[in-house]
Amino acid sequence: MQRDHLHNLIVREIIARVASGTYAVGRRLPAERVLCEEFHVARGTLRKALSMLEELGVVQIKANSGVYVRGVTHTELPQTFLPPDFKRVDLDDIIVARKAIELAALRQAVGRIAPRDLRALRGLLQRMASAVDDLPAFLELDLTFHQSLVRASGNAVLATAFEAIYDYHRFSAVYTSQQEGEEARALRHHERLLAAIEAEDVGTACRVLDRHLDSIKRYGRMAKGKRRASATHGAD
Image (cartoon, rainbow, N blue to C red; front, side, top):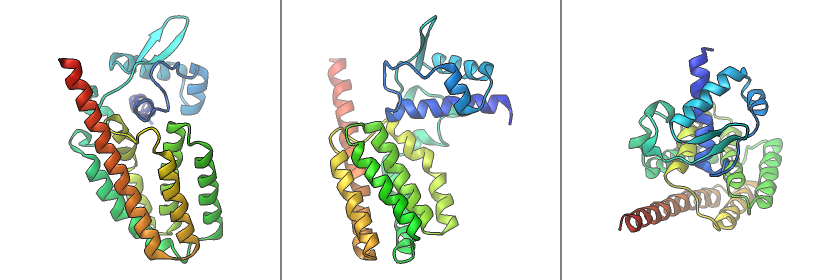
């Protein structure tokens, strides 16, 4: 793997974590040693990626202190570090794609899902319940739940299609994300979805999933509206 490609992968992953709130504004990033081990790169490669992130305004490197998150907006990022055509992709586009993939996968999964996959989904649901006060962790578990459900369908084509839009979903948090306080509602959706799957009720399962994905779109629009209002107010 070429070094330049490694730099871009690290930059892109850290941007995604900042966008999703996993790395909060003002927070210090993990130590270089930890990041090198996680990304399996030499320290020089990591430092070049961090330097690029500083140039983009995503982080600030403080001598003898560490690397701190400044924040990110998609309008400031070069296309190199975003999924293809990201700046022309709307959250509605992402939800339409997710519905096409996930509802088809769900129809195949209900009634034939393996016991180990049901246990895995139940475990993820329990972890989500424990993370309702930690929005970044909750959102990561939420996406993992859906990813696991698609894989549980046994349809490799649908699983590949979901992976293809994975970055779009993660990076959508750059300009719209789930609202604080909505985790409990999302958790109830997942509980009902899993209950319907366990009951082999494909109709109910599909309706619950459809409503859940619609709710993501609705709260995303609310978030965008709030940001527009804040920007207008700040300009006055």
